[in-house]
Length: 101
Image (tube, rainbow, N blue to C red):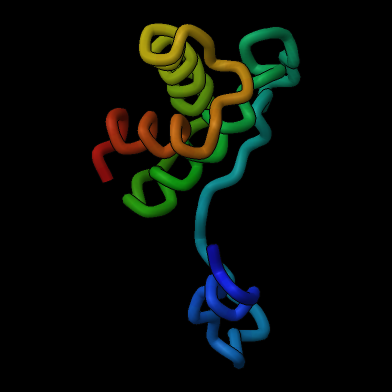
């Protein structure tokens, strides 16, 4: 067990940049206004889709985005038995498997 908080602190820069602007696409988890399931609980899926497309510099249409959400939901149901409220480790595993980045 650590003796004090400084024993477990990460090496965080003392002078982080004042702002960072990333050119990443953004859509809400229900870009067409349909907040029914599965989109109601698809915030993890939405986050990893936007991150993956932002990192790969590939354009993302609203239609493709909705399709990706539905694919990720199906995959999670197979992998974890549910897509609702996945843990950070499950979300990372999904990202790594689906996007391979």
